[in-house]
Image (tube, rainbow, N blue to C red; front, side, top):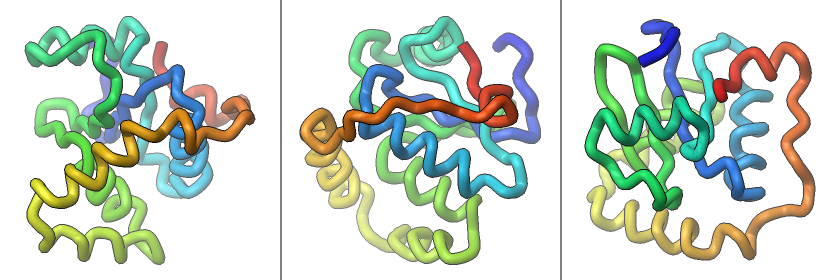
Length: 136
């Protein structure tokens, strides 16, 4: 894919979702080690990611965490891995890894199905430094 950095983790999310944008902003604020880049699933970058893997290109209910030349994780596994990468007080979420994915993905799907109701009215307004981490 275009200009990817193999040292970064790429978070692909629903760019039209206020709830998702809230969590992108949260990760941006907690990413003290500059490990994450972001792209909406609707963006050319996001669409290319989905097409290259034969994934659905019109359903944006799934969060993806991708490491170039490596792996990608979906839904609850992506959430747990993001927490693990952030470490510190957020690393406790990595302990949820012992739960079956079928169970944690059911919880993820319930939240995803209701995310528009959970959304705040605020928009993501990244700082100039954070804007460098968002791929279109």
